[in-house]
Image 1 (cartoon, rainbow, N blue to C red):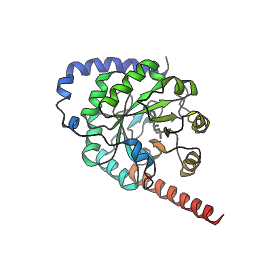
Image 2 (cartoon, protein in one colour):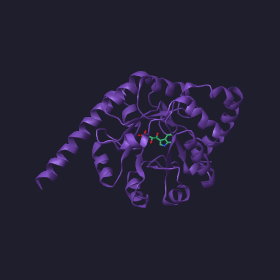
Image 3 (cartoon, rainbow, N blue to C red):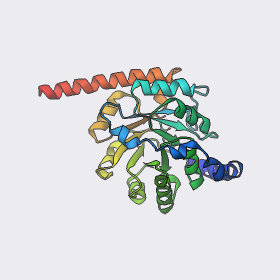
Image 4 (cartoon, rainbow, N blue to C red):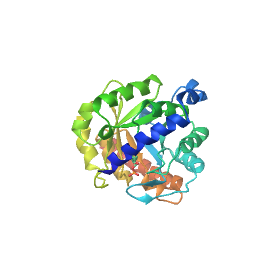
Length: 274
Ligand SMILES: O=P(O)(O)OC[C@@H](O)[C@@H](O)c1c[nH]c2ccccc12
């Protein structure tokens, strides 16, 4: 069994337990149901922002502990001050050391779109995402039958949540697109080997319908790579480890974004001179 199958099998059980502990009726009392979501897509397209979705990830199956005691308050504020477009908060606890409270803390301190990063397999988790203040959810093509994925996407949209559709191949992409999906994320991490290869994003870019907002996910280590991805049509860049492996992730993000802006400026100067 590969790691994704294992995580998903565990998730189905976990969701049943959570449903019993915190019934939907209880979640629906959250004030966030009266608050409209901020559009991740719109923030990714804002020219004054970097396009970076900065992630808070304490640990992962591939790396083990990354930053287990990170301060979500300090890091989330610092990420946004550094010029990130949005936040991604892992809420899976078993494999990634996250929790709903992490997202709630990020929500409390930041006015920006927040992606709830989890393995969504059930409508309950979508109600839960809205109840903790998320603006967008992830749906992973490799984890869901295409028809099921489309149902969940429509359900998320009915709460105003945006959907980031995660794919690893052209087949997954073509099978899973629907009118409820406007943001496509190409995950550069192979879930069998945990290797990351940005070439996958560059390859798949041409197959993503124009008009979709394109995000490249995982293994992004240098601002130069972002410039390449931008040239290939990417608007968003999901970055976790490169920041989180630093004792102060927000400082690593600030440094990264400063370099990115420098490169962008050099490029626009060069093209103005040409
Ligand atoms: O830490 P990285 O290599 O920068 O990757 C971030 C993000 O893309 C990765 O955490 C991720 C992508 N898809 C996921 C699905 C579930 C959990 C985590 C992920």
